Length: 135
Length: 135
Length: 135
Length: 135
Image 1: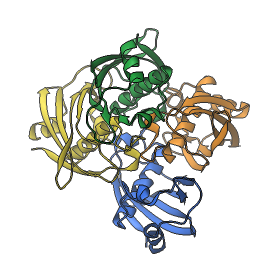
Image 2: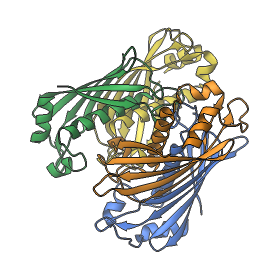
Image 3: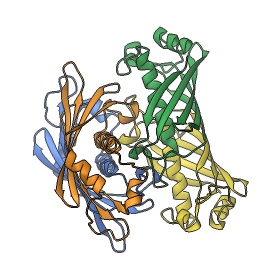
């Protein structure tokens, strides 16, 4: 089931072109991902250290469809999919609330679980796998 | 009356020391300020251009009291005070929600209204002055 | 001819995982792009307003290959290619200086020139087209 | 002896007002501080972990004097002063290169050395104290 996150565009997200800087779309999507994990009981401050893993992003793809201005209200939808026992992807979409609501960007990120100590690929901790599967 | 804003600490706010980067406390406080203005009916995307003014921050002072980690829940309180017909200050405090709740930072910013065209000091537009006075 | 930009990783680029936040790889590549334009005589503060155009990024793709820590020295290579009379792409690669030097990320961005007033696609201004072709 | 750092203003530093976002002046000053430490032989990626200390910023004060636009060339001067055996301050000034060169901001930060394990105040490691004294 996709996770939904609401967010307002802040001044700090924008650049001198008057709209959200392209890299910040990715940061906004990451916030939604963090909120989805927190809602699934994954405590970001301790989970990775507790399990001796990190789950860096290996790839990102973004399709920027619409500029976003300071004060715009966003709805961000995050849908995880398992790719293997040690990796998953997130399909995210940002909508600018309306009326009418408009799709502002589609972003895909790919996440690979590795052991902190060896940096070798390692299976997802159960709580993380459960979130991805349930997603 | 002070304005209250709730915010979760995101990964993008933190640095390699594991906690919120000092400059980002100021960005978080600015979000609270934007939300306070929006709640008072000031549309950030159009207000300044419509009135031919900008209100840059002339000074900031921050007292960082406590580190903040990813996932921490914050309460930010913003209290504006008029300094002159063309300037005001904000007294802001960030609290890390508990229990027990703890003060994490106190930040003061000073804002000066200037005409976009001439960059000369100019009186605050009425809606902005009303927000400051009512604050 | 590709443009080369040197950059040190700063604390503000990193996150609590101790390495550069994935979205900031895109910001670093954008710096290299800005430097390449400046070196070609395109003044970023005035060029777009002077020509009545904006050139937003329509797509980005990033392949993150290696974590980057605070203090790491980077070499960023930017190679533009014309896609049509109103669009171009940049192929960028970030290298972490060694010895041995290692590829840390490959990033592709796609840029579309539109008229500021109408937001319709419009041919690249000559100075920008010249930079892309010469790139 | 003060340390001097040169920096160009990037798009990512700016906001929708067209100039550098106020919090980013602090991030720019922090870059200069990092470069000063690196020049003094302090390796940022390992120094603090190696010595079991962190040196968070306890206070900052900024006097923003002039807006900075994308492409502006900056000269940042950093001058450290010892405050006690476990703390120091930095007096920083940002200049926008000219002609004529203009002061764009003055920023003061206060740094306190604490043990990572206990978070109690602890004397500065010798290499750091040497940098502050020599500064």
